[in-house]
Length: 298
Ligand SMILES: [Zn+2]
Ligand SMILES: [Zn+2]
Ligand SMILES: [Zn+2]
Ligand SMILES: [Zn+2]
Image 1: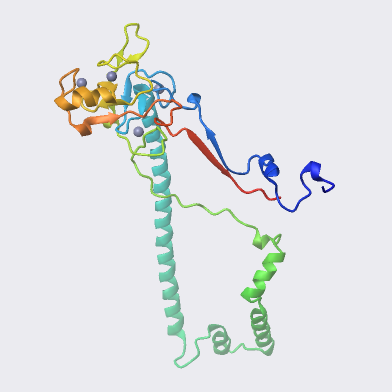
Image 2: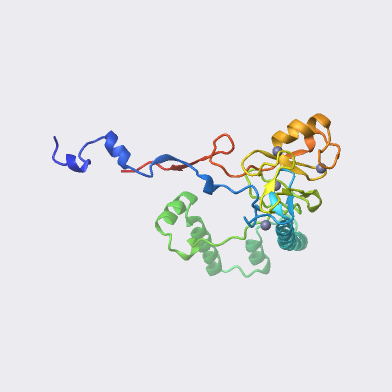
């Protein structure tokens, strides 16, 4: 037995016991309890019992007030985003116009310079100007040559890369914050459920739900079987808003093609499956949370 065997760190490999001791390594799974889920009657936004229940087409339940407040806020935010985007676009347009103008001015200047040149002369303006004006002095020529030499001596791109690697503190290399471009925002509003299936929501598409209360007005019940609406699958009818167990809808409403409460005609597509309430039964919900932690680097 090796000297450090009591501390389990003496071997070149991990033993089974050591792997078990490594908590927080690799994929970790945990089964969620009932507390991790929303109750059926809870509003998706305020998590208290719904007042004036409404739902979206995907079956997310809200209080009417909560969802309207949320949509109004979203609209205000969108307007701000659009304003920022419009300002950005206008700045871009102005910049493009200025560039066009500059180009034109440069072209005109070039043309004028060429026009003043005697025919057959070189286009190298610097030298030409000196020659034309007859002020070419030896000193001046030397100066120009020296500058040219210096320019040739400038660092090659590859050399510059090495230089940057070792001289990151030079002011020239200081990173600068660039303006991030704002993408064109959409005017469409999102359903505030923040569920995995993000979808757009219009105020007019909200469905007012009619959910029956029990005699003590404490719990929501199904009007057909009088069971409390909580853990079973629950459906709402799109046209009239009556809410009952999905099984009861299948049993009584669908065969008659009408709502049993108000006789409103319905088709199969008019039944909205309300997002299930929280139970820890695997058949109702995905009850396992999984997290991956990068491998242990020992
Ligand atoms: Zn609410
Ligand atoms: Zn929704
Ligand atoms: Zn029922
Ligand atoms: Zn109905």
